[in-house]
Image 1 (cartoon, rainbow, N blue to C red):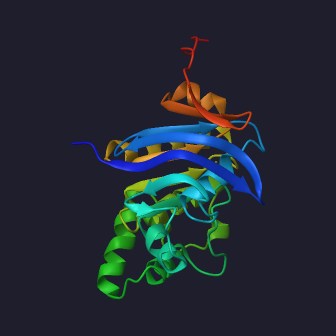
Image 2 (cartoon, rainbow, N blue to C red):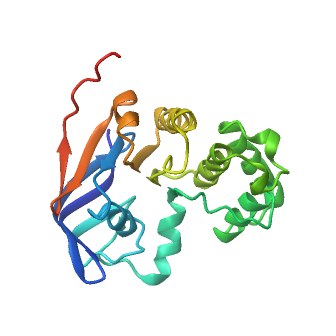
Length: 230
């Protein structure tokens, strides 16, 4: 039976009291892969911030991984974020500690205590993204693509039902973007739901999936033309 990981009904999205998206109705089932596209300033990031409760849900009804966004209390936000994996464009790795240290910090911040369990989990997620060999390196010693792989590993630490990826390939060259994309699709094949914001239309053609577009204050599904062979 499919499980709904995100449900929005009649949702308006606001940024600084200014309405950026109106009347969103969306159901995302477990295991789906979903792109969100649109020009800069059309509300993509505000939409994502509402999903991980960085912006409050003021109009409409919404639930994400069994949390009600409308009634969510401040104290529950860390628990919600534990159920989500969040991947950002700029990696957000801590520059003053190793890759191991970054992932250890994330586990401690989400309530893990047992060192053996933490070590096992860190090794597991780094192995999943082919970065285990770099466990003792500092972020500045890694390429952008490698840093994003570590950021994806960090997003997997708490076995999230849903991964929110906000322009995860935005700072990467085309080849590295494709490699990161293949990694995300592999994670999706293993049953994790992914919602990804992107402005990289080449990726959409190469890796087609259900696509929603932010435009003119609304969010709607778009149907891709089939990519022409070059």
